[in-house]
Amino acid sequence: KQEVTQIPAALSVPEGENLVLNCSFTDSAIYNLQWFRQDPGKGLTSLLLIQSSQREQTSGRLNASLDKSSGRSTLYIAASQPGDSATYLCAPGDDYKLSFGAGTTVTVRA
Amino acid sequence: GAVVSQHPSWVICKSGTSVKIECRSLDFQATTMFWYRQFPKQSLMLMATSNEGSKATYEQGVEKDKFLINHASLTLSTLTVTSAHPEDSSFYICSASLGTERKYGYTFGSGTRLTVV
Image (cartoon, rainbow over all chains, first blue to last red; front, side, top):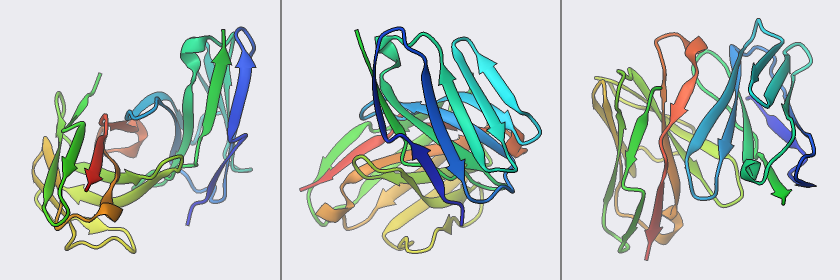
């Protein structure tokens, strides 16, 4: 069974700082990995999708890296803004489903 | 982009009644849909995988007679919580794979907050 750990559980930073969110997973036999954002009481918004053959994926201020063999992924958010405040979820996918970590709750202070 | 519409966004029901939650893929066909449950400040827990035209596959520990899943078409899956009790109060989210190949990832609905009183 895939176990996903996200560190830290919570993070509070002043506006403008860069964010580093870590994710580790126990089973490296994944097909891909997705990072999601969840606002309170809302569904999930997909941020980045990294295939198992890729090392990183970028979208605007977001960059995600994947080290499949060591079971790690990192999400970088550059120049954080108050609107980035949310819970970020890491989800490695095997051939038929996603597994989720508990998430990192980010607060960006204006 | 691909959108999954989930309704209702919130519902309050009396203990012992049944509640149906709908999940629709708006601009694509979803052969497979997934139903998750999320408790406050916890991760998403996969409840079941719904395949169009066949019976759902339930995860270990999920009561299939309590959480009825129907995937009658390529754009609609429903979750019915039968004889709801306060302990069923939770946030339920559906998801769909974006293609027949997993490499396209998944998209999620906006979730349903169920409160059983």
